[in-house]
Length: 246
Ligand SMILES: [Zn+2]
Image 1: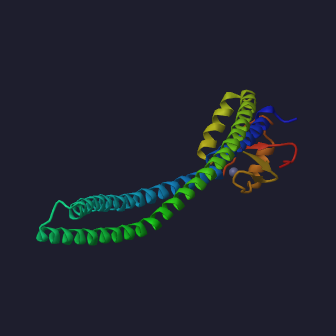
Image 2: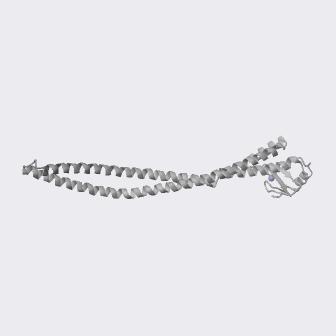
């Protein structure tokens, strides 16, 4: 058995690598990225819908104006017609004027109806487009809801695994000398998450560089619990009695 310190340090390093991987996965969950894309697409869709609704609003206002004018025109025509054929007016000049007005009001009503048809023709594709946007939105909503479930499930799994690893890490960290642990933490922060590396043969597994023969010889003759650092990368070098099992 080698000393519990350096060996425990490797266990801690393995746990920290695993924790880093889990945290990275938690922060870069594909479902979350997809959800962000979906949110952007929904926002773009809503923007289009708002501007199309605004255009439709303008056309609807024109339609309402036309209808109001048509109603007024038809009411006036009915009034004049009623007087024209009511028998209360007998002067032929008045009758002629009224007949002319009825004719002109009829022509105007026909014109307004024609314009109304044009407006209806404009509205049709607008309604179709808005309906299409609405169903696209519903599809995106359903997709988002499904993805949200996937993301939440994956996050819960990762979080519980992180909790488990953290608990295991606390146990391992508690078994290490405080000074060694502090050195490890400092190195780990400075050296991309790896503060301790195994000495594999004549190589540092942290920087993959070969130790000079004299240094290797010196290191091999140190007591098992001596803290050795790699001269090349500065990491704590852990000498193990058994080969790494991966
Ligand atoms: Zn090294």
